[in-house]
Length: 313
Image (cartoon, rainbow, N blue to C red; front, top):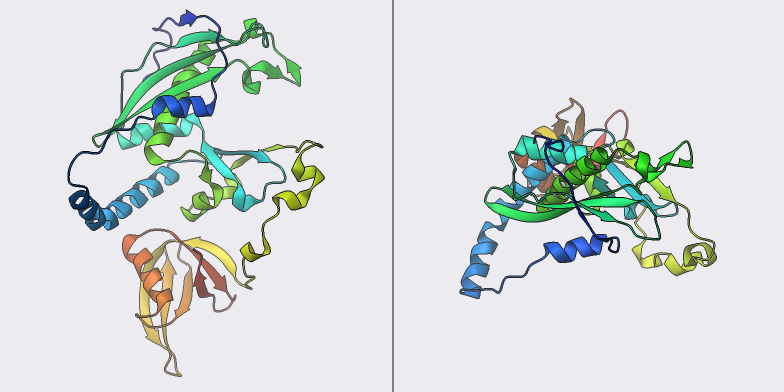
């Protein structure tokens, strides 16, 4: 997508309150009344769900493979457990994905400059809108960038006068954010659970983490039990280790004692063992992952003879 920020003159409008993520979602949401035979449509949808799931999984795996180290950011309280964290994609990754998938952009509006008002004198933000179409489906997205972003407004711990911030940078970031919002909406990437990102094969050690300290007055600090999980939700402890693998081949074998097992080879060359026959639940789930070429999260035990002992749901 070509950057035409130099060719477009910003349109300045009066000051108004800073929009929130919820404001964007309200603007982007529209409900169309259902028309037609409800039962007939429901049956048709059910019959095609498996194909649809495979298609979406393939696209999602492509999206994740096209993201690099640092393309995902997690903002949360420092006390939030890893499994409860969410991640968001950065604008540069969204531009790359839109280009590689052939997503079409249309109806982009001129960027509108809006002042933050008396609370933040001199500071402003840009807002623009656009439509993003992929395979016949179009979503409407809103992009926004502000001089209050610490990336622009801070240097060496000191505040920068907004008049010294390059305005074209804010405008360009606004357009990039619009693309990012379009990609996130199309593929349901708003606040993706970090464990889902791991399940899709991304190395979550490459995620950028931004941690916020809890206020001394918050319930998390004053009363940890207020946000503690019930004991019933504790996950059973296992002596295996969790890995995400993509299976290249599975070969049925029989041990010297007559017990069936499979030798599982993953795309990186590592080999594992999995006990069971073709009808066992473990082998069936591994086979589905192999045939569909989708990553699967498994628990593996042992060093000399690494064995897949379970599937991580």
